[in-house]
Length: 107
Image 1 (spheres, rainbow, N blue to C red):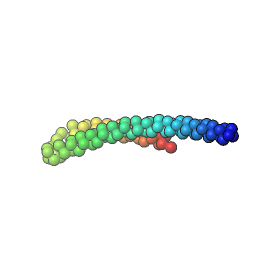
Image 2: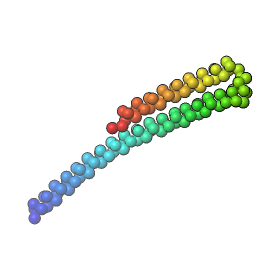
Image 3: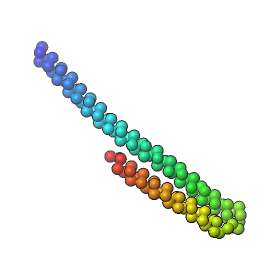
Image 4: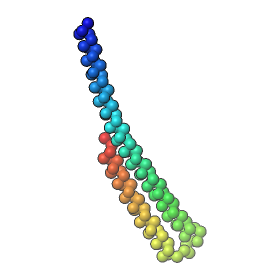
């Protein structure tokens, strides 16, 4: 009777240790997934800004060559596209940084 009781106690203790270890592992995975999700959300916002930037670029091209039939001021057109291109370069740099961060965060 005593050996059966001891065996049950040992099994309960082992089960508790296993459950505790699994809880710690899952908590760590949950934290990692939260970090990845946060990075992906930030990256998504930058992608949205990039889409807006590209829309503005195509809109400028359309305004100059379609609506104004190429009669727009070349310097204004060039400076507008240059500014949008510089902004896009910065956004691409941010996206690259997020991609590097995701490679580090993923197992």
